[in-house]
Length: 439
Ligand SMILES: [Zn+2]
Picture 1 (cartoon, protein in one colour):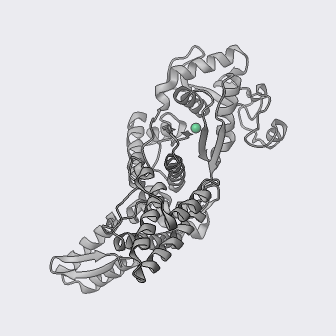
Picture 2: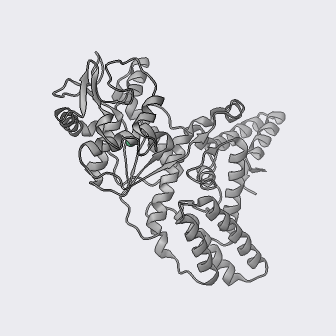
Picture 3: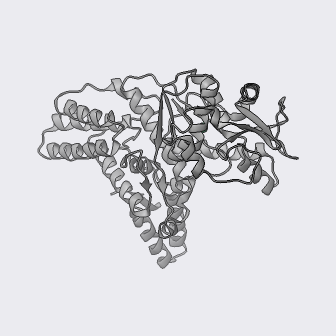
């Protein structure tokens, strides 16, 4: 499977977090079901936005890319997104892109203008297939741009001629850099071969990015992705909402202020194709759900699953109650990844296991608990019996509170205690200082 990765010009935002989690869950679930998955996800390391940032901040493009790619993998690590099998970088593939563009020019499916090379979308008879609209309709709705050398507003840049002081690569049709749509078609075909199974990305990529990738594969007479799949967007746009969210539009900020597993649970609780709303309340609700799961893991002394190696599938013998649960969850997950219903089943099973244990029926209770753990593990959500990871912000508040207490600033210490309880911690004063734990 090929998942369109980020352009590394900025900190990852919540939408990046969602698509990474959605396709991580899909990958893990396929693997859990016994499929072998070869997962490729690219990094776009040449782009207008990268050049713009480099210019604004008087640094090199390479420097910008280095910083934000580092931030990207940091965030992915925190989210528990398994590393792709391969991570192609656009700049590693420029000779292949040049070759493809040259062949398009030769066969007249592309043409040159004063600023680069464009693809002629009318050369692909079924252009608009992914958009679900014929070329005429798309053309009528297309934005008219300043560039009147383009034959159609839908034609897209394959190659951009270098302007002074921009990164450039040599090409027979003029030094410059590739357009974004050409990167992914070249890299996916190179690493996965023709006729690969699944091409994924956010809904915003369906048109024109994926349509344009597909058009190039068609024009090159290559069998491309058999299936396309897109995840819905993250809604943080409402005025009120973005105010209340503060810094949460940056994934990096969110991950500093909450347990990253809460975002995975939040993503799992909505269907991947639906829009996902993120508010403080929704995050707090996911945190409470996570606290329930961890308390459950403590009660039954469950090991943390969901590592990098996907070994959960064979780790479990399914019997009686657990087999029933397995079948219900599997049916839901195999029906277009119905994670909200599957997670609902798992939470119900959790109540059932607790009830069994309350009645001292420990054998079936434990069996059920282990199955719940395995199934959450298959979705990449690790239940942590060993207590909660203290996030950086909480850790900072604890240290601040200790300073306030030693300065005998009791009102400040109380304020910080309240701030910590608002974050779901029970705050205790030990001889060593402030100690926090989950309820
Ligand atoms: Zn792409």
